[in-house]
Length: 416
Image (cartoon, rainbow, N blue to C red):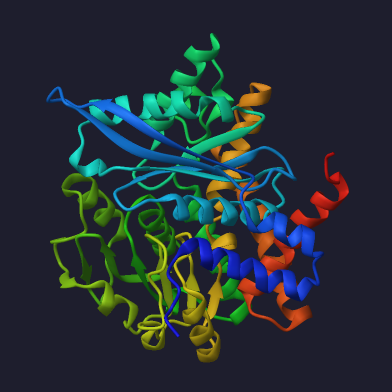
């Protein structure tokens, strides 16, 4: 049987398993299997050389039973509708798992940001925002940064939407600069949340962080921050990779200096004091902790058997295929699933949204305290469910999240 790599089908299969175990009403199951809204737009952008190029973009709103839709916007050369639909579904479960009053959404534009100028990215962002503006808003759908988007992207989106409405509306997006209503701690929130769950797992398994080693696949915002927080925890990070290559030093890599190297050069490659390394070698490396923090479907049936890590903290969305999941379970690897491990970003986005709505500003200490409280609570809920039902962490997380969303849908009823 061919391994399924289509993220939309993977997401639906994960839901199907949870629905079967929950003995869910078939009508509710059918409603949760599909997004409530998907729009596709063709985005004309005038490039720096004067020609007009048309980019394709999508926004998927999976579910809003628990509140407004919430989810990032990614710019990537390979993104498509199946990606954004799957990601929006995963966002629904993620928000429910950490008990946020949100449903899931996701957006994407097929483009190649490293090959585009800042002016071209701004024109693309403003045009895309204009085209999806009828379905976004602080009470309807709140975008945020994702792959190859950042605070500046969100600033452009907020400004464009505000111009269209005639007054400033900071709550339309999260992940903004602090000057525009952004939250302290938002940039590093996903990586911090991932490491909070890893630390909880280490405590549960009776492992001292100072005796452990880690490898990080993907050294963008999530991976670099996770690596730095792991090092701060006492973990020895020995390898890191990105789309251009990787580096390894079994005596340990200074993750803070590596982050500066990436900022200056655009890649982890050729970091002083390290040797070249590949993703394939990273997954087979003998480490205690593995953090996949790049794109989806990177842990498959082809490489799962080679993984030696005791703990996998999924910093990325959908990094593990269902077939690989079976192998990891059989190997006894402790997997912290993406819907839990990378929920720190949307949690602090929620804090930002609340601050914007009520014209507040929380200091970094409060943000980090609240983030840790919610992540530790969600981790405990998942582990309690896993023990109660005698299932793996991913299944437990889905049973919790899907049941919460389905219950909200049942309580709201069906109109008309």
